[in-house]
Length: 488
Image (cartoon, rainbow, N blue to C red):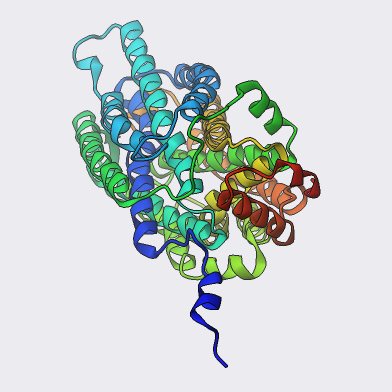
């Protein structure tokens, strides 16, 4: 006999979501990546080549601004956590409130203040103020947006769906700057011998920032109107900032998550240094477009298969395999060191790395949601925004380390103001090649080691956690007393 309607209904998760809402959530990350990817991709070049700020001073700028983020990000987490939910939810309203400020702050980062003053101190001060403002506003929208996934649904399959579509949204938002910007933000010059090279365009960079500003606002609003918070938040949140953050530091899954966040975000940021490689070694800035396709195309393909692979093998297991694949390709590229006429080798390497990394990228945000659930089961404290705020800071820290190390290495190999006006220079350009192949080899290897040997939440260990969270979400009171059943 077939199952009754009642029996069938009990097999359907009460907070199950469909593709339509997952697509709506994806719009939010597209908005994030329109502004963040462009800043990550082009701001260093804008500072060094347009504003003529020395590479070591830019490195210091990124380092100093992140010192403020060490305070700013946890504070945002606490502010969001302590806010009582309104009719439109606890996290969704921030998409509406902060969309315009973060988009405008991104645009101002690319305003050429040197048109009005040649005073290097004023130019540097303007860079500090606008970049800090962007960082603060980005955290103000990214923390609640990331936390939103954990309250849209507590269904594990639904969260994998959200993470998958977030990767799609991020791919769309990231593709615009990476594929289109290289065509618009450079001026082409011809040498006496007929060869060409590129220099950064002040007006091109600003106008592209304006376009990203407008798109980000539209997509943030689309996310706001097409998502819903189903998992109830506490009417009067009881958030102890010290207790929540100390609990994270004692949690092995969270510590590993934070460290992998530093490495993942750091490598994504470091990939922007390939622009110096394309400009000053291969002497072809259009390679940036091909390189972006090489990295994103595997992800676009694997998005079709990842949810089923996660269901069968688990997130930790899949991320470990993918990072191992990426590490092997990166190490091989460093050993080969492609010649100036062998850019195709570099592109093939990026494609292979993109295939391996796609498993890490697509599952990443579902892993964050798992750690949020784990923290709740262990401590009895709902701290979605706090966990996400610290994770956001870890990713920013990764970006900072990548920028600081990369810029200092550029300075060390001889990248000076002269290099902003010319293409290839013997010795310096080879140094850039070494930087752009060695650092990824190290980073992807560390990511693989952490996922393979340090991150403890296997597919089997997550099942009882999902069960406890589901039961607590269906009840009026939590079940913190069952936390002892889950061990590190």
